Image 1: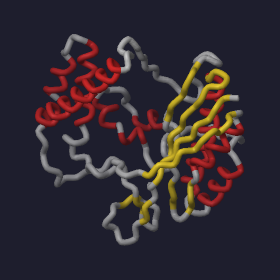
Image 2: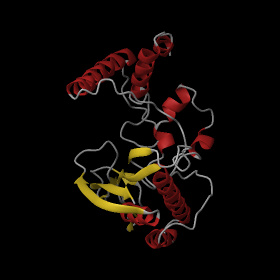
Image 3: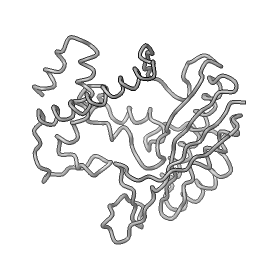
Image 4: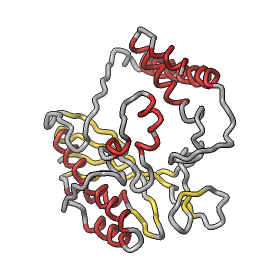
Length: 276
């Protein structure tokens, strides 16, 4: 807590934000959160880490990466380029129609990660929220999302939902909501893109209780239904990821030592779609 208060007292705004990002990144390691879990799980036997040492180590790493970023900008004569960050809903951005040159995005992995849970230490520590349940409802692809189904999901999407409903009705509703949300996002992407410009979408498929959840194929259908031309799909093998790539026979995440494991995250796909 004392270190956090010191960080908050830094007067220069950009430097303070840089320190806050660093502090956010060490919260999980310096807590009793089970490091190998994507969900909030306690590890009482977890060794104590010195927050100051962790902060210093991570700050040095962030600084070195920042220097490399600026070196690349300088070498490519791009140093004067600026950027800005806006918080909003991807289903309804509020941006002008036909105003964007390129969209690069990676939607949530369906039924796999509660992103609000993954970031809850930061959300709570920085007081970005006081109610995690209400925060989760704002996320796409979450089990806590509000009911706002659309009939725009595709034939393949409905087929996947139907198969899942025989295994887990609650999960089937979640994936149906997820595909509905993706359809709305892709429609919004087409609206704000300029004619002839492109969207690059990175996502992966998964499997749950022997039901193949083909997010890539569903996204291709949704994009085409929204008026995009899908120009290319790039498949790349996942060599290393921080998330757990295995599920057991019950569909729960597990590790590589589990006897009944099945690897369900081996590939990632990049869809390149052009606005007609």
